[in-house]
Amino acid sequence: MHKRSIGEPDLDLRDALAAVRAVAAEQAAVLLRQWSSSSPVDDDGGRDFTTRADIDVERNIRDFLRDQFPAHGFSGEETGDDGDDAEYRWLVDPIDGTKYYAAESSLFSVSIALLRHGAPVLGVVQDVCAGKCFSAHKGGGAFVDGRPLRGSRIDVLRKAIVSVDTPNSDVLPQDEREWFEGRLVGLTRHTYRVRALGAGALAACWVATGALDAYVDLTGYVKPQDLAAGWIIMEEAGLHVEHLHPICGPPRLVAAPERLWAPLVQVLDADLASSVDPAETVG
Image (cartoon, rainbow, N blue to C red; front, side, top):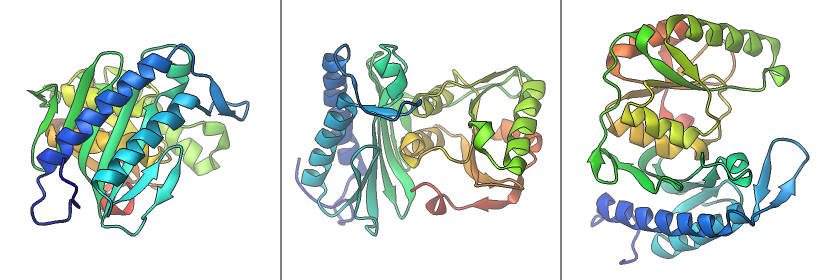
């Protein structure tokens, strides 16, 4: 691939997407080879830890992106940030779902996103065990292995299955805890099902396929690397994707088909007029 900055006039986002799809597939193979032998290398005794595979795969992806796009910034789940002031910046989560990976469960993925001025313009999520690649770039549509994604056809909130990310409410300030608990109960009362998968990138992709009908971040603290690729994939699949400002705490990301958007926001009691630009919140 010819080395260039995506900011150059001759850039074709399709070329960049093809290259990133290829490196994601290569690194998925690395994860599978290390799966049964990868053990935690950074473990605080709690629920968050890092495996050797996380570090190896992120370094491989970082080296590739630095070689192909030297003018771009980078933000990695494991190896840190550089080029924060760059117009374009890559966000990489080498294993979204490390806990599942370490437990030899299949609910994990490789997630790579490109931001321009903080807003996602390209995303790839490699579902490692299923061997499927979800991808999108701005204005180009969303696909899984070449098949277009259109989101859910459900048109009534009471029939919808909503994927949520939930916080550890014990550590939240009281007003945020009460907001979260109230909205979670509200969702269970006004939807068909609520699912909390703990694998944000894959959950976003399944919203894009229609396997899930909507997504709500009830925490406001989900890491940008977890959702940036999923954001552009959901958006290009035709979903309304937006951060909303509740009455307390940080913005929350909500994604839904247009016909479910208003009733879902009503349940969340968020003020659409106070929604914020993705450039302020994604990366």
